[in-house]
Structure formats: structure tokens, C-alpha cells
Length: 540
Figure 1 (tube, rainbow, N blue to C red):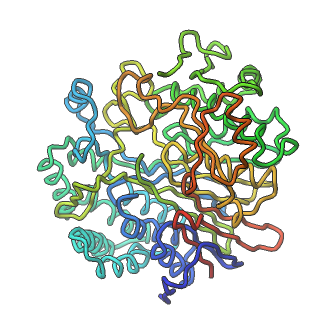
Figure 2 (figure 1 turned 135 degrees about the vertical axis):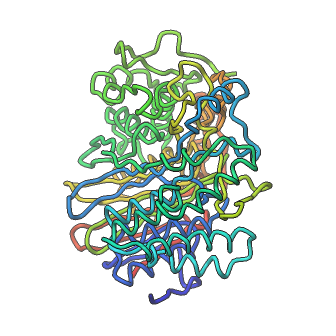
Figure 3 (figure 1 turned 180 degrees about the horizontal axis):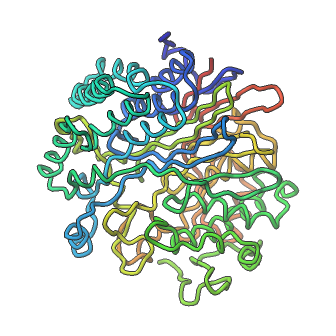
């Protein structure tokens, strides 16, 4: 495949053939190579994601996770792929967590089943055109030139998967399946990768076993959607925090944001108050819907939204956590209100000339002091800490359960066609920054190359998604907080302080976005990533 020079990659790009925006420039180069060789957005996203696990290691890992949204040009539909590993299936393991808590600080017990490999393979099988061998070739070049101890080990692992693909007879999809089966221990002949992974887990004192690997599957789901002023916003399900963005948009429908003015005190205030209400529901109700009945239809309903909107006081910042009651249709949950006394992720969005669009958010929160990939080079993260050990809580750990994660790609449609794809790193800040970007575009006509670096704002008025403390009130981060970029005027900051916000001014980026805008009239793609956050973009 032709190669693009990494040093030629900047932070924005325009093209009518295809674009990639992501974290490390080397990973963007991989995606562009694949597009230039005739691959589609799914092929390029698969290669970019694997490359990000090398170029952006610590922010993500091959042993981590990556939720993905894709608009498929053939079916004209959006699907959500759950690249999220699960808790150990052993009840004995779960009993240990419930007694001792979910550890951190590099303890293997904090790691879920690695999900990136199966997510990549599933994406290629269902939406791609290329082989695993083809999309992994530029990634192997990066690994072969690398200097970390785990680089050659991971290269061996990936080459074993290529070998399995080559040895298998059948269709492209069957060959791809054989490659992922070798990794997850489902192959009839060779399961050496899974055997090495299990040995690594045991040596590190973890609970994951081959049965956990073999049972892993990437589910393909319908997205959660809401319509906002002629746009359809698509998010992954409640195994992510994504639907709270949909809830916030519903609450904001009742306010004339454009008339308030971009970054005015009224605008920042009302958006922040809507975020607080939506995140209170996130903290109270969101979880893996395969295990917990999440009342999402009620949370997004007209009736519930109309009951919650009057809770926004335009003169005063709320200093309480106020989940609602979607079951009994009450604006505030009885006994649920209280007055309360960050990790790694990277980004990836891709669009191609055939109309396919991908938004994905790779992550892992690799513990820097204890980087260890064992024999396979597959390092691990901490995502089980996004579960908790609170009996009766929807997000309480259980055998084979997905954590409710912060990772949350965004896809936006206009008249059924993709117009925006957004990916953001930043833990609990991710959908707050996405809301900033969406409103910049929809309400104020700000295009990606400006939207990614105009001032943003966010609050820590919510529970910490990485704190598994069973006393959930104790995980609340900072009541009434409001962080704004220094570009927000002093007059606006003073007015927000007057209304009760605890305003903090930040010079650097608030969360880390990349964004693609697709102009459906002229067929052009406009990609950008926040240069302050070392994001990159390139086009054919």
C-alpha cells in the first residue's frame, strides 16, 4: 500500500475521497493508507484502531475496549458495535469483588475481557472489504520499529492471527472468524494466544480464564436516538454514558439557545444545568441493559422531559444531585436527592467516498507504572472499576456483565444521511464536550475546524465513573463546579459565579475531540481535531 508521511499530517483536512481524524499521527497515516488502497471506512477504522493501540498506548490498549458507531451506506442505517469486555463469569470471582471491592493500581482484577480484537474483526466481517492481513500490515510496521518490551510480543500475536487467516479455507468472513477464534481460544486446532493470555491472568492474580475469552462476543445493536432541531443524534446504549447526551438535548429543546448567544452566561448556565439533571439519571439508572432493566424509553419521553425542564432555575445553579423517577413519572426521585459534601482514552472518526462513516472511542486506562503484556504483548486496563459493588444498584458487578463506561462516540444524521461524526477522549467529560460541539454546529453554525478549539465548558457535578465505591454518594466529584476555557469573558464568568457556580478557568483543552462534517451537497469531508490536545486529521 502507498504510504503517507507522518510528518505531513496536521490537525485538519478536507477531501471528497475520504478522511481520518484520530489521536496519534501514525495511526491517522494507517487509516489513510487503507483508504488510499481502496478500503472503505470500516477497513480504515479497523486499521486505525489497531494502530492507536500502539501510537496512543496508555490512552488505549489492545486489551482494552472500543465502542463504535457506523453508518452503513448499503443499508442506510446506523449500528452500534459493543467493543466492551465483560466481568469474569465465575461467581466465586464476583463474590470476591463484593467482599473486597474492585481494585485499581495495576491489579489485574480490574481488567475486563479484552474486546478490541473481536470488535475489529466483527467490523471487518460485517462492513469491511479487506482481510485482517491487509489492515494489520501497516500496524506491524509500527510495532516492528517500536522500542517497548511489549511491541515485538504483540507483533507475534497479530502475526499468529494472520497465519490463522491464511491457513483457513473458505470465505473472507470465515477466514476472519478463524483469526479472532485463535485469539479467544475457540479454534479447533490452535489456541496458543488464549492459553498464553490465561497463564498471564493467573500469574498476575486475576480471575479471567479461557472460558471468559471464549464466551466474548461483539454485539451489534440499534443506536439510541433523539431528534433535535432537524438532526438525528445517535449514541450507543446504556452500557455507555451516551444516552445522557440525548436526555440533555431533550431538556434543552425548551430553550432558545441561539437567542441567548454563544458562550453567554445564560447559554453556559442552562446547558450546564441540563447536564446536571441528565447525569443524575445516568448515575442512578444506566447499566448493561442485558442485566438491568433501564427505563430508557421513559427517560427520553416527552412527559418525563416536560416534568424535568422546570427544575432548571435560570437564576441559580443547582447544588444538589437530582435524579428523577421515570417509573412513577415524577420529576424528582423520592429520597434520591442529596447534596454532596481521570483516565485515558483516544479518538477515531473515518468517512469514505461511498458514504460509510465510523465513529469510535478506543480506551483502556493502562496503568503506567505496571505496564505488562505478558507473553502476548496484550496490555490491560481498569474498566471493571466502572462497575460498583452496591447491592441492588443497576451497575453492580455480576458474572459476564459489561461496565457502564464513559466511552461514547457520536453520529449525527440530517434527512437520514450522516452529517457529523464525533469522537472525544476525557472520561466523564466526553459527552459534555460532545454537547458543546453539537450545539456549536447546530445552533451557531460553527464548523469543525473552529468548533474543536473554540472555548468549551464542563462540570464535575456528578459521580465519578471510575470510582467503584459502594456508597455512591461518596463518589460525587465536585458539587456546583463549572470549568470554562479562558476564552470565556470575565463578565460572563462573574455572572456565572453570581448564580452560584464554582467557576474555574482552564487554559488547556477541556476533553479531547475529533470531528468530521460531511457536506451532503458537494460531497466534501471536513475533518479536524483539537490541536491543543494533539489530535490529527488527514484526507485523500
